[in-house]
Length: 387
Image 1 (spheres, rainbow, N blue to C red):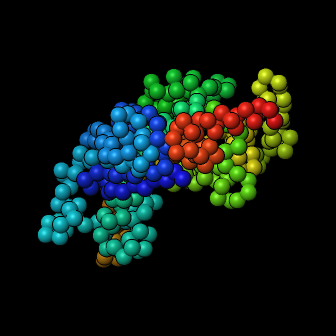
Image 2: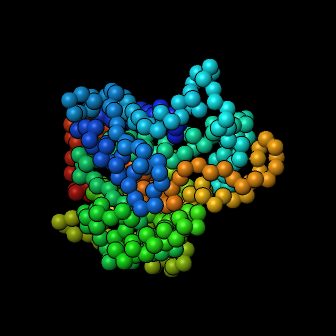
Image 3: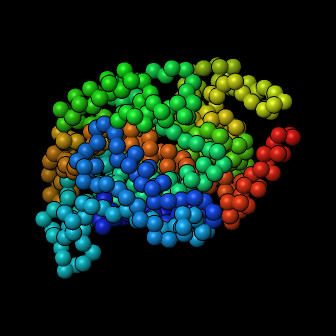
């Protein structure tokens, strides 16, 4: 069973993740994780925090000489900004700085609901953990999971589809490799260069207005075998797990797989993918409106997931709110934030999708070592070819 847990606050000492269940023999180095952490920090519209942090991981356990050994993997990412918050975020009751208490909840954030739920009257106790800074730990976990997937020829990529109402135009079906080539050299991560230029201008305009922007990103996973997930129970359906993982990313408000909500506007004949057979490649489909999943299981086509990210709630021109202590109206508190983080959200989504796909692979091809998993995998592929 593959599972993980993260801990850490936005302005605390750092972020920690423990990943358990990755088999032995998976190639994993700190640079593999640092590469993904750097991708998360990039993107047009990011705020001042990204100028401070230069995320680097320290592998504390579970890896020896560049390979996993089967024991839990502990990862640590230091917060460089901690030096500016040592008193505010100290665990020592003798070092207490009350002057930066937060009592003005921001609309659209976890502040008020979390304060009420946990009984806090300093909302910093909520905003520190609910911050998207936590996703750095999840990207680290996803990078490790991704190394397992790569051992089986499975690849993932993300790209921006829309920002602030500016939509990119696709140039027909694009391979994962082509999307990566087009997106990794741009700070918007959009395959449509003309749309990317318009997106930058839209972000600049929002920044000038003290506002923020959301958008839509897409994650594509290729090279998956048929049969990951299951139809027999709700909690084993691959689409449910993937949708839940992507929805768990801060500020994501909607997820669709394949053509998603557009299916509601089409006839059945325009929604379902016809099945074909060729001796050299077995069963296949010429279209992929299902997004690679049917009946809660992978069907061998690319898995395509699209998600909506709302505009970040922290505005430089704050909305109205109410002070939780005085109950008087105020403009909401301001925390350092981004204008737009849609490109980064796509990278985070790659990570959580990679984890769920790795978990499904381990469940299907169980083994304590990568060698054992590959043996089970090859045996299964042989049975698929002979079906």
